[in-house]
Image 1: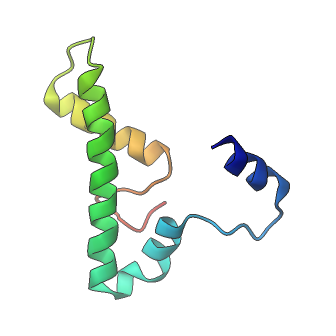
Image 2 (image 1 turned 120 degrees about the horizontal axis):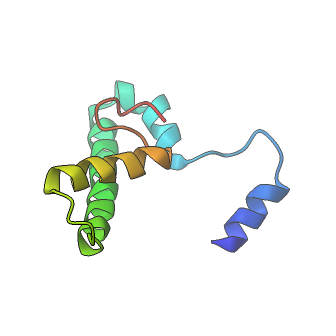
Length: 88
């Protein structure tokens, strides 16, 4: 991880960007298979965050609150939104 951060800090524009984000915006709107793959990827990420939040739920949040928090975390990391899969 630190190596990737260091490499990114040393590079200059135009940056290569995120493969998923680039695919969402460039190909996803026009290709149903790509759109399905991007949505599945986003769902998998959200589920991963949700699982972590459930495991560490010391404040006893409801399942609905945990789900909302998982979506918030995913979106805060600029991964994309389920409702608008092309927004990064």
